[in-house]
Length: 404
Image (cartoon, rainbow, N blue to C red):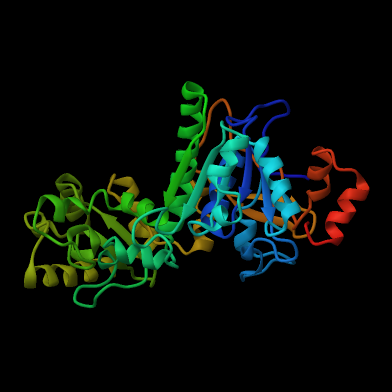
């Protein structure tokens, strides 16, 4: 593998923050897969166990690369892949052998699935008491919704987040980001590491129950203060930082592009009013009713007087919270995104040179790195089985009988 991106691969001999941590990854789809990738980026050894023939369902989601999905390729680097049929008794036995040698198991099935297979936490901890077992599910392992099917939109609906998205008087809309899914990935990685640290004191592992719904609730930390401590039910297009205040919004410029303005603090708002030539607005930062609509109309006229580039230059030069509304293509070419290395590339033996999102945390002593591209389905099955002591004949038998 070659890689020309600065700091994408760790220096020879460098150790990752999680070097030595062995993770058995039974993930399907994004939340659990991204969780284990975050651990792998920091040096953990991630072995992804996939269904023979089909693999992780996400491999087939468009847009496609040459063989695998772009979404799969963005959340499965720094892993090995083996195929294993967990419905076969031999497959279960091999999974148990691997779990006995692992620090962590991560799975993303509905509650009860791994228990029915005899591979749940209660069974695996008998053979490995130090095992940290993380289950990432939609609604969590208990409660009336635990076995319900769900996706990101459903979880955001249950927790009351959807009314935050939308325009005044138009009702909620579908958000563009997967807050619950990706929130669960990050909360899952945090929970796993906390359990690994706790094991140093207790000597035993534990079960880590991560719910996508619960993870999304963390994103309500600011807005939930209104209904819990006050009387307002914040709604999109009406509440002050959900599009209901002209000082905190998105505006179209002379050239048809857009900018953001986030002048919530009084001093930022006053400075904006001065440079924008509307000093009369300083005293009415959060107008209501018709006054608000009138201020929005005036602001729209003001922003149409300059191009996006001109407004961004003014914001940056005058220390005003504002910036461009980039497309994703523009974002990955943004000078700050480039400086933070949020777009990387890695050479894949089948897909060629592929893009990868950068690391969300930077470490001074144990940097994250891409040490291997996303694996092809079952790429490491033979190596893994050989490491368990299986000879070539037995490995071939397991492939013929559908176990791998």
